[in-house]
Image 1 (cartoon, rainbow, N blue to C red):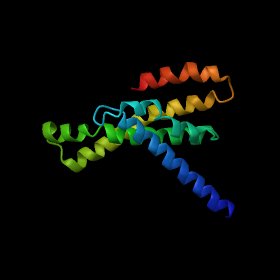
Image 2: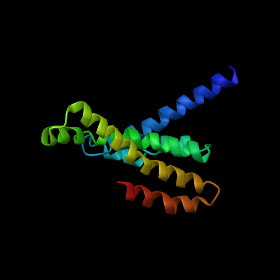
Image 3: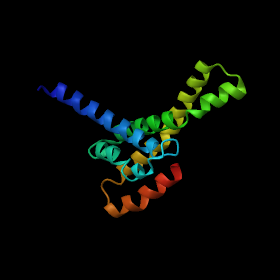
Image 4: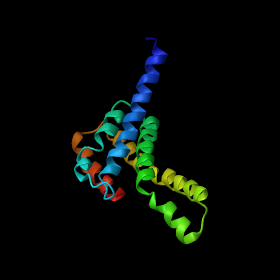
Length: 136
């Protein structure tokens, strides 16, 4: 396999893992009630972040957050349509923009996680859980 094809394979695997992390987080929320998944939902994202630079870390974290919020804020479209009389296509566009914005919170978590890569594992344990708790 040539290096270009191998790099594309790695990137698609990283995209799938990041997106699956967003799906797992969403499945642990009340609509699906698979709350034990919350304990393992960040593992795919953390595997992806292991060997990435700061820009890639931010982007993969943002993707995980985007997927999570696209699944969990579905109700925004219904509310805008029913109570605000906003056309459904417009409400989906607004929801997508909102999910793009909210995904930045997960991207910031991923970026901070990357910044502590060189430090002690204790720093990650101190920073990680509170930052995720503040997000949700």
